[in-house]
Image (cartoon, rainbow, N blue to C red; front, top):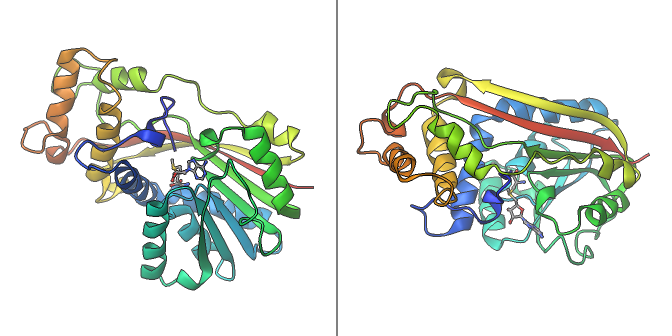
Length: 285
Ligand SMILES: C[S@@+](CC[C@H](N)C(=O)[O-])C[C@H]1O[C@@H](n2cnc3c(N)ncnc32)[C@H](O)[C@@H]1O
């Protein structure tokens, strides 16, 4: 996941000292609140995969929300999760233990832009998953080519990107000028969504599906973590917005993030989630 200001790569909840921990928490909340779309996506993979995948690779796994979904969806599969961050992988192993799937998830700490020797150990994969990750790599064409090499013929690659950070507030949030969140997004989501179709075809893949997910969840559908998710996302964007917003908007944003303030996210009942994701499911012929 990433805004187009590279927010995810370097973003951090200002109230959490370590950027990886802040990002991991955001990703865990994201997976919890948006669980229904991930389920829909892994359901589509189950339909495309025949037989069910036995060896799965999760590229740029982060804290492992994708690895866990996949381990649940494919109960006979082994998942190899790769990430450059030891801390992300530590969280992943803890979650895998808590969910009783530690024996089916292994971790590799590696820079995906460097050697894939460790990733390739143990033979080819049936499914490769790369969620909110491909925009991080130095050379996407090379990474798609390597993924192609690591898949067995007939194997699947599932790539997902968050097109834009989610929106949570009504147009008039009752604080500052209306349209605050739109202005925050304009200041931080500065690049167009990622588009991987041509890259996939150039690497030799056959595109099975390119699926946009338009996600609209009201408070009830989003569940009890909605407030924490909104706080994590807005705090991350806030940390990148200093140059792009005027002082009145920054003050309004700070008030939204301050739980003591009457209009704060923590005290509101009018939050919802609006976001879009795009997934590509491609096959090595
Ligand atoms: C936005 S997070 C997405 C994590 C996870 N796939 C998810 O959907 O929750 C991107 C992850 O890629 C990892 N990453 C970035 N560059 C990397 C690289 N060159 N090699 C391996 N991992 C990398 C980061 O550490 C981070 O955990």
